[in-house]
Amino acid sequence: MKLIYDTATRKTKSPPGVEIFVPEWGRTEPIEWVDTTPILEYFDFGAYFYYVADALVKNGYVRGETLFGAPYDFRKGPNENGEWFERLAYLTEYVYSINNNIGITFIAHSMGGRMLLYFLQEMPQEWKDVYVKRVIALSVPWGGSTNTLKALSIGYNLGINLVNSQKMKEVEETYPSVVWLLPSEYFWKENEVLTSMNGNNYTLKNLDQFFSDIGSPNIVEMRKDLQPYGSFMAPGVEMHCLFGNSDNGVFESLNFGKGLNANPIEVKGEGDGTVNRRSLIGCNYWQNTPAQFGYAIHQQEIPDAEHYDILSDFRLIDYITRTLCGVTGYTEVRRQNKTHKNNKIMRIRLF
Image (tube, rainbow, N blue to C red; front, side):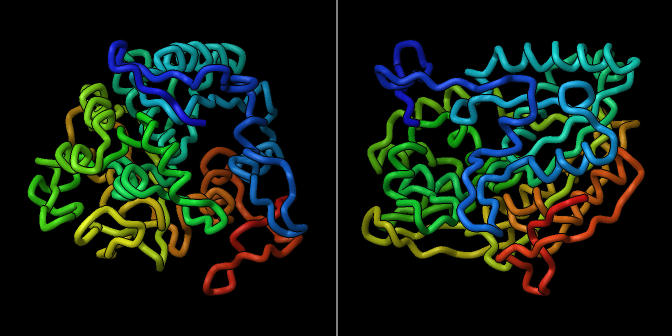
């Protein structure tokens, strides 16, 4: 899963003998499940967009006719996903044409929302007014996340204790996408301390020095490559922005003490377990901006919903089916082993 950064071409590539590709582009199945192997009878660990897709299908949508997927290589940033943007434009026009010229609803999660934002920023307003009905954005790190600092310095295991953080670091530090999601100047003050080490404080102003000090010069170069893709101009379409929160929150800064180590002191702040709250509520930034004038913004917080689990939360699924199908209300037919603190079911089967 590693990438190799070529300082001459300023692009990444897979190691020799390795080929990784996105399967079945345009279909939803590859993004409904990242792994179909059941771990426990009541724990569908590999489910990703399955619960959302299943709810829509049970309310009249048809895979391959009115419901499509647009997966991309999540390891790479927008600078290396140019073909994806072209294919997404074509897919949008195609789906529009085979469905009686009805505007498209995009549903995007996490970094997919940032990729979609850049796509919409680049498309002419006239095109968006014809082809795009709305965007439903879920847990999007509009302004990045401090967890990327952990990923690039000591490794971030996504909260999965079975995964070795050091092994994750060896992979994550090669991903331009992680670098792209570093905290943004739109959401963090330039003098706000993000990390400390050996008596030095690192902020947005000298973050490159931090990566140099920990021996990661390629990250500095990747930041330069991705600088043109950091605009936060409004998308110019109707937006529905949903996000959760978590008792675990997200750290706001890391203090490594005398040197890089696996157990830095974390200063905690609000968030959904992966993304800082200030970034999740980024849709607020577009209120009353010229590019968004005339296009509504709806924002909703879902309490006790974490970054990934939100995709199986019945409250989010109800919001989506109410918005797209005019219906709500699902019955739990089996209980998962993970619940909200208020005993609300995190993962459900739909009928």
